[in-house]
Length: 324
Image (cartoon, rainbow, N blue to C red; front, side, top):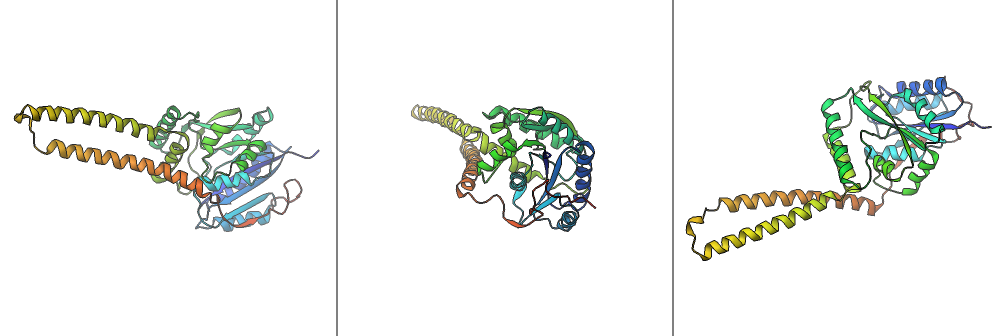
């Protein structure tokens, strides 16, 4: 009887200090804790500008269990990992970051729950040794989205977890050019098992997440899974219009009864104009986010464009290649 195959998908971008160590850690963990399974390790590189690709090439030459996809450019923090997931071929797929902030030793725990029947097993952060402020703000963001969305959002979930082949097929069938895996798991995923863990510090290098990328993630989830932005704009607009009508009526009555002492100059008018101008610009920006999300889906461009792929000639389990 053929062994089941575990796929481990590792996205990279400028991870020259981590590429080989994460490969060795994953390989050793699989061989030590899960020897009854075959495996493949798939790197998908998002156009690294350092020595990451050369290191991955060397690993692929040494070990035929390792595959690689090199993107022709950087396609962002969501598209590239998603594309890697749908190009795995195992009975289940584990996604893990190259920076060691996703503990490798959790893979056997994921597999154990998968064998019990769970199609999705995810890691859920309860603590983090990284920036405390970012962790706190991220928690607030998840709680806010969870309350605003009709879909139950998963708090402190980054995508780290195990996904059964059947769910990977669901991802392939979506054809979503702007995928948000955290929302897709919550919306379309079957019953899942959540395993709590403490997020360690990054092993080496610098994180590529910044306030802009975090804002980008927040806007993608807002526009994909909530209507709150446009609803707040609607209700606020109706409210301001009603209050403006009452104030206008009040000023008209004051004018008619010659209440001259009520005149207060242009200051209230200027304040109201600038206030409403700022509100309108803010909501136009919100509307623009929704329109950009719609535009990306209507254009239906590919998730990524490949530049090269390595070791895709054989199916996992058919090769006797071992790491040197």
